[in-house]
Length: 287
Image (cartoon, rainbow, N blue to C red):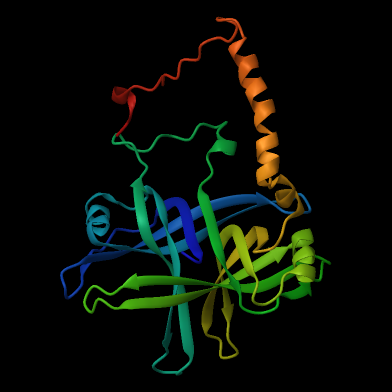
């Protein structure tokens, strides 16, 4: 594997599930998941909102969704981001839409129904929206400054996916291009060090925003709002200092042996026993 394209969300299904069948008899459905969020800006302001995600579910997982997922159900979804492109039949403009192709789905509601949220559970009641990407930077990052004086950086990271076609047996490859937005000090640091062609790790949340064309038509853009970006494939002084040559390894064997002798010398009972037993019983689980 040469790249990574993963997204995890915890959210709520917004409408009844409609199951479809492909000509080959495979079940497929599109879930519409809303993920409430709250985060603190650099100025200390708390912002609340919600993001919407289209999730395509295939096969037996789709059958489970069609049978058990209802509007309002809370779900965990793990998958990959995929952007589909097409040409508008009327305007002939190129259109695109980013969705999640599900790889895992977990139903989170107890059999007895959803619990009421305790009034003091604000800090532990959040949902999940986490994207992780490892790929190549496709262009030099572009730095801008907002009217409020904040630095904002935009870049594109490409990931590749390879699979074997079931019908032909041929290996196929698909590239995804992820729009990434970085704010603040991290944006400033990346603008000075990240260049086209470098490999990078990006972690953040997925956000879809809307905008209008000059003709007044609504368009959608999905971006990764990054809170962590690491440049990959570069030397690291701290890591290099931890590497040991063969001679250094041999010279370190003696101190290690002395440590083992010291451990053997510890009287019995000096270190209390630790019992690794779970207090959770199977009959207490809600599912």
